[in-house]
Length: 166
View 1: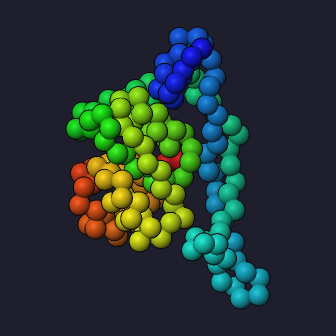
View 2 (view 1 turned 45 degrees about the vertical axis):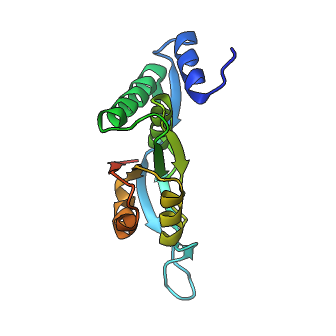
């Protein structure tokens, strides 16, 4: 298997393995609890983010066919709203199945993925989006307020795409 790109590997895997085979595991957040400092009673913050303890579900699995459908649908959606080959697509969300689908979907349809992690401050996010001339931002519903706080400083951004749930 001589694959030079992630897109090529994705296509080859789809030809080599059964589409009903479990492929990608994930866990859903069942409950979350803010962690408090015992001495002060204040929420504990790490890098500006409130520390939370999560209770997670057992693993749930997507089949290879389901993952391929998500990736292809996402890529087609980007193309439908105007993404061209070599356009920059910023992914600004927690890593997980949505991150993976956005990354592969954009890549499969010729987009260049730029990852910006949620730990950056707004100045860092503006710099990252503008420096790469990103036209698209992919994020989670939980991070939309962050996007709204800085996107007006990113003149090349044409679309913000978000997903709900984890």
